[in-house]
Image (cartoon, rainbow, N blue to C red):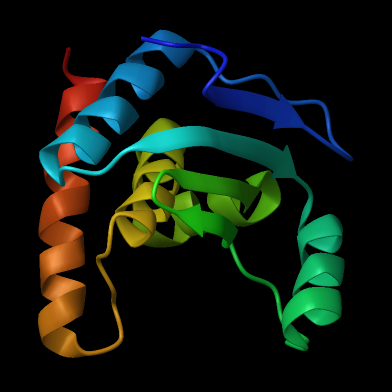
Length: 142
């Protein structure tokens, strides 16, 4: 486990991820399970407004989202992943799950995209959800 290669920070809001080691080991497992290499993945937890500005500036999308992934390199994987804590809280309430469960889903979702999974059609969405649930279980129940 290399804490320098997967990092968590916050920007525009006060937030600190508890039990970072569990997340790091699960994210490394995902990357290993998909036989990928990585050099650096930087998670940034932020507000809805901050992520909306990134979405507008970089993708020309004028709507809120829970996550934006900026991949810089495929092999080894190098990426910044921005997560709106505001949106994660709202989604957790909307879907009737705990904040930790929804946050775990979004954190895992970002890396699953980086290792090659997509969610553009129903079949891909089902595979993504299955993989998310598998890895969330590792985070929440170990």
